[in-house]
Image (tube, rainbow, N blue to C red):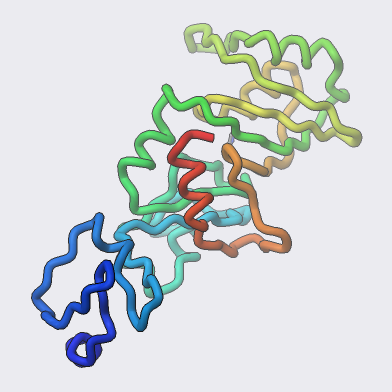
Length: 223
Ligand code: URA
């Protein structure tokens, strides 16, 4: 780095920086160029993982595979963690970041971003009755629990024991509990989307991509 600085290849807003002790603030970081190119030295990282079946949503675990095992070695020290939680067998969109503020906002109950799930279930095919029930904001009556009122959720009934359920809240095991309340059970669950964030075409389970600046902006601005 010192050599690169000495050669005058690093600039901030057009001014060459040669001093290795020059201290860079977070605001400056995105304006630094190397050989005239922005180097995106921002402090935060954002990834969209296609979570595979059979992985815990955790960074480390002594016994079971976890999403932390899927991070490349050079990212393991960056304090990245998953935003929210998908069950062990649930697959699909999982956001990982070291931006604690954003993570906190996205998991807060005040955050009403849509999450779309593709659900495969067993039992009778879902009917218009369940669609109306889900869309009116159902109340869960579960053994040993106080009744729990849910926000309206959009239900699209698909052929072959599948449906697409769009939630705007993230209660624990919410999809499974809603389907169980209709006397059916979930046999496979895949998250297709968080807000506008989806998997990229051809993105295989276990693969992740770094979010573009625009994707980060959309998440932060709440769209
Ligand atoms: N709802 C569930 O029941 N499980 C998940 O993994 C996500 C949402």
